[in-house]
Image 1: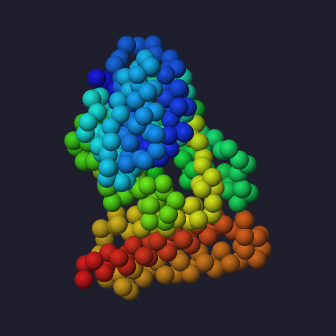
Image 2: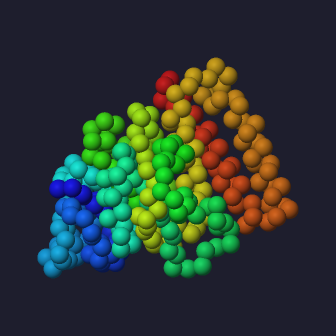
Length: 313
């Protein structure tokens, strides 16, 4: 098998029909074999029945599998372990792929000496975006667009997003699987369920060993935005988690620290907080929200260093 498309889902059977239909209408030019693997991450809705019914009447290979350990990283790792493809492509159940999406990814792997490919992700919101969500914040909704030209990515500042990423199977043998301590768990509606960063961690590990990344703009998908993702708490939680992830990755030892928190972080946190307060008074809370996200990042960073210190005592 050349390609395995892995879709992980939890209690979102209503998303599956559109997701599958887009896969069913792919424009395939060159010959290659491919399958779709639906990983049910402990759903209690009709996910199993719908997938099996769809598989019985559809023309592409669609397999259903169940992973009882809750968490997106558990589900993805399960998909890696039982899939058949030499190239593994990951999308989410709220993704709608364009007609030449699959062919463009295959072409990229065939023509570029790369380990991972990422495509464009454009957001598709059912409602008008709140005015406090500015264009520079779209990335937190899964949006990714590095322009119209295909090119290499560095794996650190630029790397594929989870809603549209493809990796050679050999990569997992080299750097391991997704970290199960990270990744969305359950619905992602609670703060403790939304600790993301597993993709960032995975691709940074690949970059650390010289992995090669390529951006393919023709591999375009639409990401369906859900209502809870348009709430301020969603963005603040993401930034808090990003700060915690950064502290986890920092292997440095700081002699000047309080409770494990490097001293230089405290003035940065104070400056960010003061700037937020100033913007609230001069520009209003909506304009200042982006700065509040920065404050929340520092809180996560400080909390992460503190936890590391407590665990080492």
